[in-house]
Amino acid sequence: MRKFMIIITLIVLLLFVVDKFLLKEKGLISKVDGNKFELIQDADSLPVGIKMENQAPNIQVMDLNGNQVSLADYRGKKVLLNFWASWCPPCKAEMPHMEELYKEHKDDGFVILALNMTNTEDSLEDVTAFVEDQKLTFPILLDEKGEVSAEYEILAYPTSYFIDSTGVIRNKVTGALDKENMYKELMRLP
Image 1 (cartoon, rainbow, N blue to C red):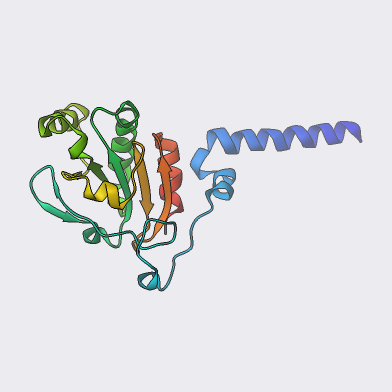
Image 2: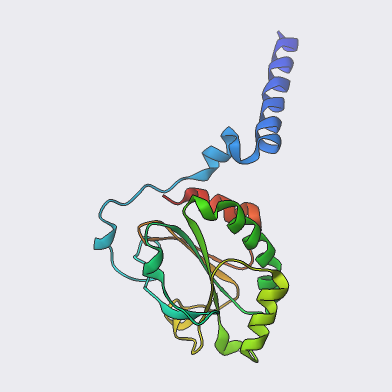
């Protein structure tokens, strides 16, 4: 009986290792850990604010190409709204992960809106040089007066808001994220 219990324990342990480390996001453990959010049917009736399960405040800013952009333009998509600055080391660390994730999932109804806190930069040229150096392809938005950062109460950089396809804030993360954690948050969004 003891040998049988040892064999069963080893099999369960082996299955756990395969599931967690070889299958990663496709495995059962990650699906259990995922805690996918349910779609809120009457999301438009929620209050507007920066708390979880509030409608995200709409923003209207210029992008790096001089086009006016609104958060409302992306209704129907899962949005990672990221507040960053080119001089911020943790921001620099997470940008390659954001670019990889964006390239892999932009056709899946996902968008990254990287809102540069332009009022904290020495010059707009610093932002442009950073974007070119990093070869970023997702939309780069400019918070030239710091109004959006103030409205979203950004106190540390980077800060990311995960907004579902109905415009509801589902999570806020302060500090740099790696690709795996961004992906997990993305997969939780309805």
